[in-house]
Length: 302
Image 1 (cartoon, rainbow, N blue to C red):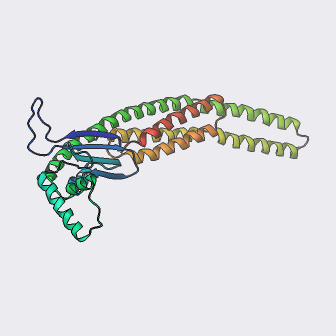
Image 2: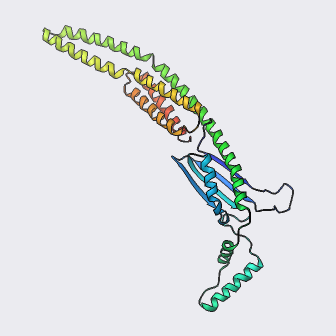
Image 3: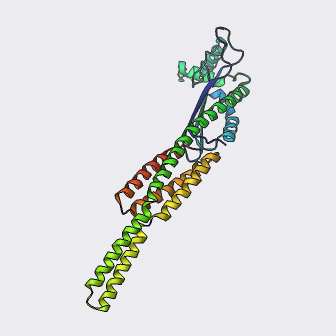
């Protein structure tokens, strides 16, 4: 399955006039735009002109069947009217509105006359919507949701390539750190032997020698445990394996990848805190930079 980004965009029209023709289309021309950004859950928002609002439940059902996460905004309108749904009123509608106004003012002489904006708004709300709007809206939405999903898939493929590249770089850094572990342990062993011999030479009695030996042994053991990062490197490799498996598997992987990114960050931090050499510290810093880059991109995956 592909990996989908939560960032996508699609726009289009229904029943566009053929190129070079001046005839008016048989039905109203609808416009629609779908855009999305990342979000923890699916957050749908609709901005529909008044005539198209009855089609919102069908649009919601269509989108929720195809999209699982993201802040999605859907705009739809009738071309030539703008988002306000304004249209040119007929003479008959204006005459009827004028007669109604005169009737009201006969009973309420203090009532003021309608403004142009109020008249247009009243006629727009009272006019029956063109027939077949629901079917045309749903047909347009089905086309655009397909294009919208394709755009999210393309962006998801780009993010997957980037994440796999960061995984490879992290593996290379872990490979650089792996040989350092026995070297650091051996260096500590040499230091321990030196401390041990110094303790024996400085002791004036058996009791003092025993105390000095115990202290040297305790310090060496604690330090050896502190600098041993083999366990952290093993867990880091395991997390990288799982991230790579999820990316190849595809589907809804964003939340699980986010968890493993947090675990990677934990291991890299521990690696840095246990570091006893400048080279290992540099590797830890480089790892955290790569992991932060991955974290930013994983938050865009569905």
